[in-house]
Length: 214
Ligand SMILES: Nc1ncnc2c1ncn2CCCCCNC(=O)c1cc(-c2ccc(F)cc2)cc(O)c1O
Ligand SMILES: [Mg+2]
Image 1 (spheres, helix red, strand yellow):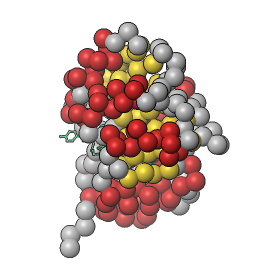
Image 2 (tube, helix red, strand yellow):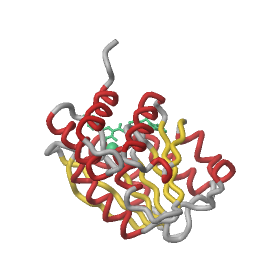
Image 3 (cartoon, protein in one colour):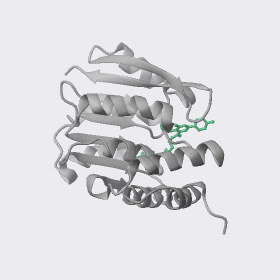
Image 4 (cartoon, protein in one colour):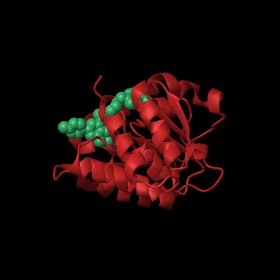
């Protein structure tokens, strides 16, 4: 049967990247998406903004919602200090399978716990299952209509602390209007928009960084 796009992306990584070299894995995926097939990775332009926020926060605990093929997982994991707890959640088993292989090819499998499941089911269990009290950094890149309900779950289950940073992808395209309205109007967050473009295109998109004030 015909391969899937994630499987073709994995092949491109295995062919063009150097095992154990995260930078080469990132470049191989970006090259594949620019010259072979577009795919919904955060990409190189927004990826640089992601890198700068992760570096600034230097988190001890990280949550990513929406692993997809592991591109942003590799971008984040390569910047983390040893001993950081990093959980990434993926709903689609086929994507999760490819992501595991891409994360391992980059040599970062020991830094990442990839969990398969829906964010809404998992968030209430994270404390119990993974011994996390709060997250220092959260990257939202999953179903766009789950951003708002999930940030409310973070608050409800006490997963945020004063200073927790949330970074949301695609706030313009495909768009997360209700989430934006919430974080920009809530007195509990200080939000800032980072203008950019939809991965590998000239279409406007951007990232919203929100600081939880407690
Ligand atoms: N842990 C979990 N819980 C719930 N859902 C979960 C999940 N883990 C996964 N999913 C299921 C979502 C999987 C995809 C999410 N991302 C997107 O839908 C996405 C779409 C575009 C896009 C833009 C313009 C276009 F013309 C077409 C597509 C760009 C992006 O950067 C995107 O991140
Ligand atoms: Mg995205």
